Length: 439
Image (cartoon, rainbow, N blue to C red; front, side, top):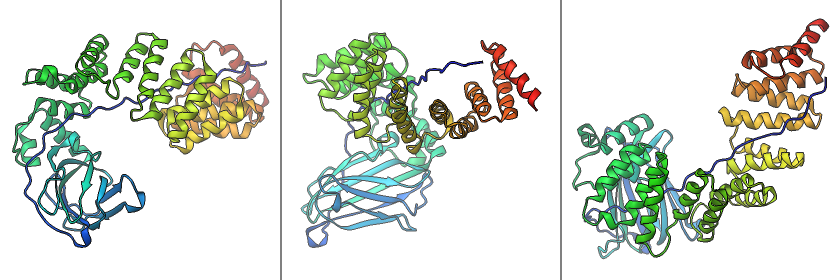
């Protein structure tokens, strides 16, 4: 009873490119001077109840010279300080396992009181650590940060975005009117796309809303997430009407819309424009390009694009998985196994995705007649996904080759239980009978 070798099929997806909305800054009144011509950065961190948070890692990453980056931790009173930071451009991040920042005020002053880019108060999705600071000699930066555990963060953020009164008490008094676009951004970050779209549409009625390309782009993104593809395309055309120079992400979304409509070649052309524009997330763009080329049957080009994506982002899971699949289909088993193993090393060892990775590793090792290694891989796939019918069948064949017929029969039977209408039922039942007869 000879069985045929089955093709390996995996699908790779690409993450969506995020956009940004502008937030009006709050007033600040802090002045100060540090020693040696360097900037002093200090602040406090509290939780959602107002209690000090200790152990929060505050990093300052110099955008030009990595050796000038620095980090510190908040103490028992939630206070932290970087007393002698060399001037320059810095990105600031905050880290505490299980917590997320939801409120941020930052006052950045030169020694003469000049505002060097203060902002806030920013709340929830807008309190992200993706901003840069310009630090001047002898300046002073003061930061007020609030963080919440993940569960409380989601609840507080949703209430605040919807205008709930409880959240007002939780985050402190709001000193300025919140623009509907800001509320929409928070809801979008929480994946409440319908609520975000409603807020963005309300923002259109505000002064200047109809001619704001940022707002129309935000609307397009929400419409895309809701599956309103025709409306999203119209919103993107409006963005193009309002802006002379295409913004980062515009061609990407046009590519995704074309792909959804089955116009793969057009999608590829839009995506190449996004890549040529030199926007952020080039690795993700190349990963998506590789997937589109694969769909067009241009597998050699797909491999080249995906390998470039992996060179830029070694942990890009979709690129690693798709490369493994393409190399397996082309008969290059060694390279396929390398990329699948890299996917495991990058973290694809949990849940559905991990099960698929181990299934593919099992198939590769089976084809190379490394049956013990194949069995171990299939076992790991089943451990992650107990009802993975294909893995049970392949593990049955693998134990059959290892002459472990009882184990083979067990997994064959599980396969039939999970697939009662299996087309190969007759062959599998025959193998189970042979296994039982042999004891």
